[in-house]
Length: 49
Length: 151
Image (cartoon, rainbow over all chains, first blue to last red; front, top):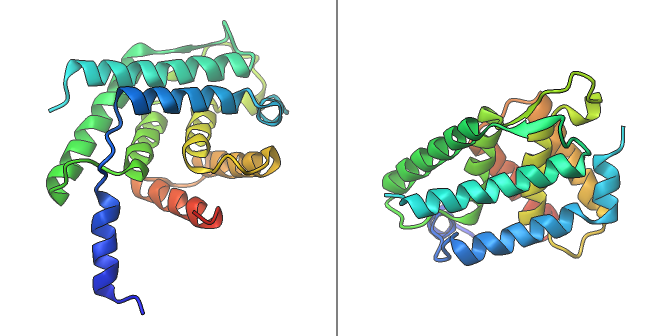
């Protein structure tokens, strides 16, 4: 059973992030963005009236 | 706290995504990125994140916070500006479109079809256009998206 205390601990863990969002991660995110926006379905969605 | 390199790198990140959205919407020459507004967006974002880290005594903000606050300040400062009066209504809310795209790209797993991806895109864009949002409500939207996606 999840207690409020456990919830609090989880929240602390969630707030913190050991991964930085710098050079490599930024590049990865950007590549992912470029690929997603070029997906045929997404392109069609963006250009639908 | 945040060096010139980090700010420039982040500026380039958002600039490139904004450029791509303009191109994908076929708005080259009809929309542009206002660099001063983009810098406002970034300084507001870093000031917010800095306060957040101080308040919670944490070293690094998590990914949900990075993108919720990043998208919030994108919407508040709207660095992409339309200069052509004849742009169709569906393409006018370009900052809202970029905001929705960024969240989908970062948080919706790849395995989902474009149909589902576009449903989320439409819903988020609607939310940004017509609902009251804060960085915290965007965080909640992202959490709901992750739960809905079973992540």
